[in-house]
Structures are given as C-alpha cells and as structure tokens.
Length: 239
Image (cartoon, rainbow, N blue to C red; front, side, top):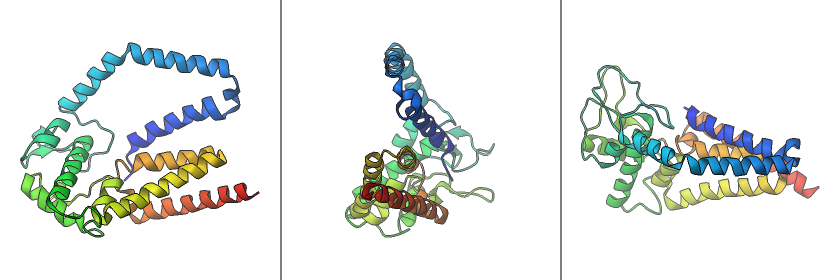
C-alpha cells in the first residue's frame, strides 16, 4: 500500500520545483529569487516553533505519521506507542498500538538488532527469509501478536524497501538498488526530463515507508516506468 502522506508531500515539493525552475514562469528570476529568500527567512523565524513541534510529535502519543497504520486502530488497544517508546522499550504488551511512524521506527530497531546478532551483512538472510526473523523478534519484544480480527505486528515486513533489500539480499543487493536509483537520477538530470526526475524522487521517498518492490504490482510499476524513461532519454542523448 502506498504511503499517501509521504507521496503527497513529495509531489507538492516537486510541483513547486517545477513551477519555479522548469516552467516559463521560472524565467522571471527576480520574483523566484525573492520568494526563495523570503521562504528561507520565514524558516529561520519559525525555527523554534518547528523544533518544538517535532519534539512534541516524537515524545507524545499520536496516530499521525508519514506512513499509514499497518493495523487498524480499535478499542481493544489501550495505549498508543510513541516513537521514543518504539525505539527504547525492551518489551511491549498485547494492548499496545503502533501508529505508522512508530511502527517503522520499531522495525528499523529490529533490523539493527538482527544485524548485530547475525553475520549476514554481505549476503542477507535470503529472499523473504527475514520474515521468520521479524516474527521471532516480535515474540521476543511481546508486540501485539494478533487475534481473530487483526494480524499481529510480527507478521509485517519492514515497510522500508532499503531495509527490506538489505536484510534479505545484503549489502550487495542494497548497493544495486542505490545504483539503479542513482543512474536513474543521473539520466534524468542529463536529459533535463522533469517527469523522469519526479518519478525517481517519488520512488526514493516511497521506498522509505514501503517495501514497494516486494509486491508484484510494485515491481511491475517500477520496472515498466524505469525502462520507458531509460529508453526514451537514451534515444534523446543519441540524437
């Protein structure tokens, strides 16, 4: 499932970049630069408020986050886990609910623990083999293990493509993914193809909150558009 908030934010940023740097309006340099300077100035003015907001979001119970909730909130849960607790608590209870961001922080913690306990840095656990290890960690940390209405947290993948591929294909597999994204960006900027640039940045951001390539529709979507952009911009460079 797509992390809609993340995609919307990146889409908004890319739209603004296009409007100010790639559209006909971008030729009005004086206005563009004035807006950029004003934005930076306002950011400095509200720095303390932004910092306080981030700290509040990190320490307080909240269901809001950059990623969707992996389990639907219900009255059976008595406590919402904060991001701080997800990172630091040794164990949880069967009544604890993980909002989307807190769950992803917990999964990142699990990832680090698995790599500390297993010598799999280079080759990983193998395709889909990390699921067993995640499940074992879920039992160890006593996260919600599921009931008749909900699947337990221990059954969920990393919800992060970078962690997922690192855990299952090791550093080599992770490096290949990074190289694929790097060459996609390089080709896009060289061709000055804003749509290609947008596609790559959306994929980079989406991979932070979803194991997108571990689903059939995800790998098909990425492969088709990656190849189409690569072929199109290669032809342009040859002409």
